[in-house]
Every structure is written in C-alpha cells, then in structure tokens.
Image (cartoon, rainbow, N blue to C red):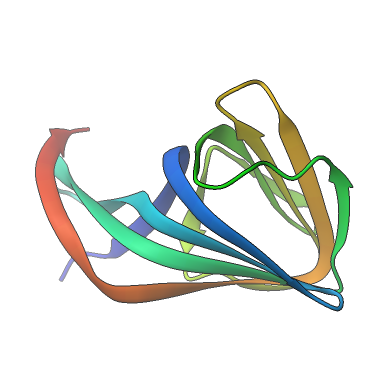
Length: 132
C-alpha cells in the first residue's frame, strides 16, 4: 500500500464569501485545486472542490476584498510551520495560526487566530493526472 497525501493549492482559488461572527471568520471557496500525491507513483492527480476555511479568535489586518474574487497565492501558518501557496490536508490547527491571502488585484489581507479548520464540501471532482 502506498501513502496518499492531499494538498490544497491557494493560487487560482475562487473566494465566494467572507462571513464574520464575533471573533470567527469563515471564508467560503467555491473552487480550490487539490493535488493528490501518491508515494511511488509516476503521476499525481489534480482535483477541484469547494471548501470552507474557518479561523477562530480572528483578528483581521488589511482590507477584505469584494467577493467573488480570485486568490493569487498566500501563506497558511501553523505555529512554526509556514506553507506558501499550498498546505497538506486535513487542516485542523490550533495555537498561533495565520492566513495571509493575496488577491489577484495585488491586494492582500491577513487573518490571525487561535485555530484554522478546513471543511471540504461535497465530493472532489477529478480534473487530470499531472507528471511529478
């Protein structure tokens, strides 16, 4: 049996909504790309899926974009680990967490918090196989 890893890709993600309720911020993405990596395989597979990214204990800096918008890239921070433009799933991080997102029009915003969770919505849809 091979080990399989799913990796969330930030560039090209479609941010549809931003909801704030107290110190909780929920980012609704209608589309993100997921790369499914299988150890020992010649190719990985590319998928798309909707997700909800939730930050609790949230403090926002920078200007939130108008939705919908496309994400050009960014960093997801889990304590001492920084993941640039991608992060392995599942995401259920606690401690010092941060989400820095760059919007395609060169605007960026940061959400720092106590936790970040990613909820995958519906089933992922296959796009294609990609060479490693």
